[in-house]
Length: 108
Image 1 (spheres, rainbow, N blue to C red):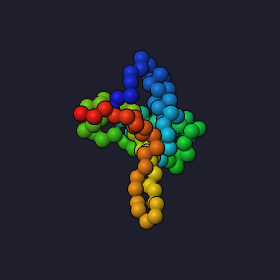
Image 2 (cartoon, rainbow, N blue to C red):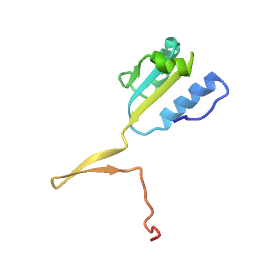
Image 3 (tube, helix red, strand yellow):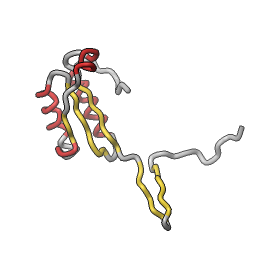
Image 4 (cartoon, rainbow, N blue to C red):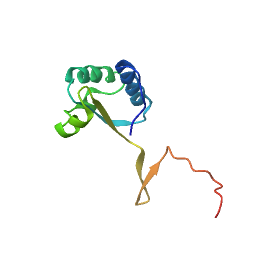
């Protein structure tokens, strides 16, 4: 899913940084460049101010996707912990703390 548009590469990287900074409980993050690996390494160092280096991985974009995306593509994906597994009196469940539903939903 596209995160938005930016007019310059620097502003695009700033936008990606802000997305990660605003995310809650980032477990792992992957940077996947098509051609510019040094830029990905530099961005990894920048991200290390908000995430530990062990959680940030760099991989290369494969030729099939690279042919469609073109040179200079930098893909970023991260896994975020959305809820917590709870154990209450022997029952296992899943709780999503970030989702709030209205109390009075209209009936059909």
